[in-house]
Every structure is written in structure tokens, then in C-alpha cells.
Image (cartoon, rainbow, N blue to C red; front, top):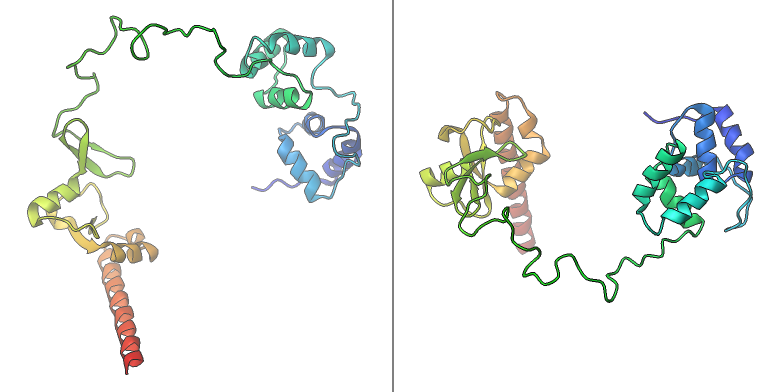
Length: 264
């Protein structure tokens, strides 16, 4: 449901935006009205209601509502070269009893030019933890030995379902799978063309009887999906499929008729 700002909230934004940054405005707004609006949401609210701060680009105004105290800023500057911003957020919250979010600390360090001094690159002369080893790590008692199968390996012939509810069967090593309904149809009727699809007549993907499988052109399947045939009740689905075939046949006849007229 779309949030609608009250007149009182809009007046609060108008009164305080000229003297507060968006971060401070969002925080004080949330404190005032017991909400949890993000800085982006407050920015959008100001824009939608034509509320301007009146400051020049880049101009920072003083505010009695500061995200961090002097002591907390000193703590941030001291720990930032040693810790990630995520860990600093936790440390600030634990040390000073705050409830800051990582996004607030990220924005604060950027807006106030606080640098960690780290480049993020592997510095020249530093020794990596796996120096002198072949591969990523030295072998140990828990290393995977050649010829061993992982604990979650499944044998050929194992079955499962994918995220869309289609049954699959493992047909070869190391990890070759095939949809069960396509395998059943192929074994019964032969190869399946690349432009064709095997569909369930009643729409039930658990009904793997061969009588419930139908081979149709992928173009027809696209039209069925377009007109929501698969969403029809089971008893109406065959009628919907026939309706699609008739529609496609009629379109084909119209195209052929136009071509004949053009040739004549």
C-alpha cells in the first residue's frame, strides 16, 4: 500500500530540510513520527512535494542533529584502517549502545571524506596464506581424494524435481539429467525435434502417464501460454488447446490468402 504523507509530516520536512542534510532529516523525521523511512524515500518525498533545501550544491550546513558525536567520530577514524565498515558498525553499536545501519556508516564515511587507507590490492612484498603450495590450499586430512565420491553424489537413475515442479532423472555421470516426461515420450515415440515440446494434457506435472503427454510445436505452446490455456480448469483445458489450433489455422489461411492476392 502506497504511503501518504500527512500535512504535518510535509510541514516538518519543509521546516527542517533547509538546515539538515538528507541523512539527518530522515533520522529526525523517523524519530518524530516513529517511522523507518530511508534517505532515498525522504529524498523522493521532498522532490514529489517540491521541497527544496535552498543550499548550493556541496554546501554543508551545521546541525544540532549529528549522526555521530565527536567521541564516536574519533573511534570511527581510529578503527576504520583496521576494520571493515560492517565490523565498525557493529563495534560502534556495541561500544556506544547505538543502532546504526551499515548503510549509514557507508554514507557517513563517504560524505565526510573518512578513508581507511587501504587500497584493496595485494601489497608488494606481502606473503599470501597459501604461498609455496600447489593449487589453492595444502592438502590435509579433510581433502577430497581422487576416486572418492562426494557425500551428496547420486547414482544414475535417481530422480528429483526442479524448482518448477518438473520431474528429472539422472541418465549419466557425472551430472547429466533429463526431464522424466521427455524421456518417457522419447522412449515411446522416438526423437523429439528441437522445435517441439512435450506438455502435460491435464496440466499436472506429477501425472507422468504416457497418455497424459502431448507433443506440440513450440510456436503453438507460446500461443497457449499467451491465452492462458494452462490456467484453465482441467476439464476446459482440451477445449482451450483446440481453440488455439483453430486460431492458428485461421491465421495461416489468412496469410496464404494475402500472399495469393499479392501474386495475382
